[in-house]
Image (tube, rainbow, N blue to C red; front, side, top):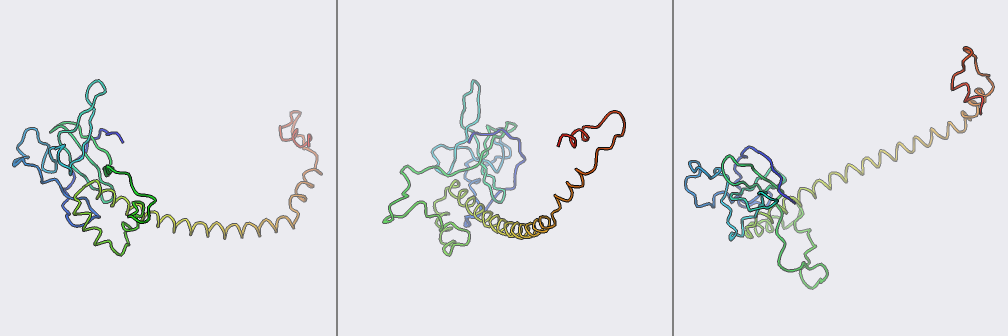
Length: 224
């Protein structure tokens, strides 16, 4: 997903280091000791991007002639569900952002061999999983903000799916009850022969001449 230019206010600093329901705080790993007084550094919540640091995710920002370059400073912003990677080149420069996603591993995921750990068995990340606390500790030990972001996203979407499914089940029951009532109403109308009675009355009455100019409705009745 490409970076999207967006001016934003500085969010409150996230500081949560043992819970996979929030992103790992990496905003204090920069070596700059006086960020507030630095003429270029954008502030305390930002890190100077280091491509050698596996905890830093690259954010490309547009340059001239359709070229891109990595943002000089990055930060992770968490809004309660979504984790955003933001980047800029310094103070008073545009801020670019995109959703933070985990990097793909170097090897292909195991989707078939049941003798090994299946990478598509994601039930261990379920928000109500029995091993949630144990899994969270090991997610924290990996210390990868992209991995943490994906787990938080997976749990939020799983919870939302359950909510939508319950809502859909209730809606389907409402539709079934309404269809039963509609079926009974249709039956009553049919056995009352209401269409026959209505149109027999319509056909038996000649059009009323309101003036020498008939209306389109009068022509419609005569043509039936």
